[in-house]
Length: 176
Picture 1 (tube, rainbow, N blue to C red):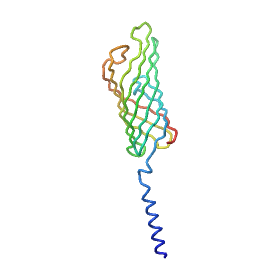
Picture 2 (cartoon, rainbow, N blue to C red):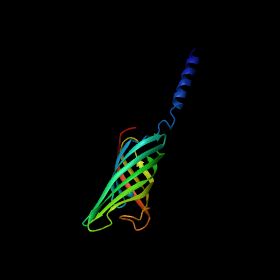
Picture 3 (cartoon, rainbow, N blue to C red):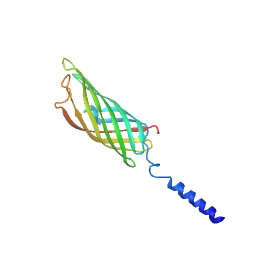
Picture 4 (cartoon, rainbow, N blue to C red):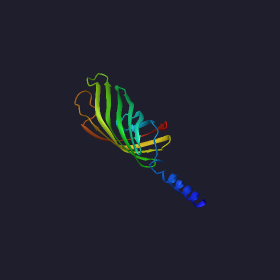
């Protein structure tokens, strides 16, 4: 009887231990993130951004990001607003690959100029994100391409395609 009880106990214990795979203990990012982006999708303006994870499964995340940036000069001002949808993949523990696509809306006003107005630009992000799975500090760095497909209104770019870089740092909160 002792042998049967011991064997049954050992069988249950081994099955419980095997049920805890790496996929069940995967790092889950917090739902929300607020960050300051330098250079990046707001071009030379810099921006304050809010990001929300809308879907996650295992190591894959989808998120939306919205930001606002501005630049003031003696002759006028310019505003920028990046809006992106991101794909995030957990490479290893706190290291993530991130790729995103969206638009940045640029609004420019200069005193005495006829080129004031809105200029929507296609943009993206390809890079790395360092973020703890719980809450706290978040850092991103990557390649940011711009493509200005319109030749109307105020054009802040001298070319249609502009390769650019960006990085951001911020704080993540709100557990999944």
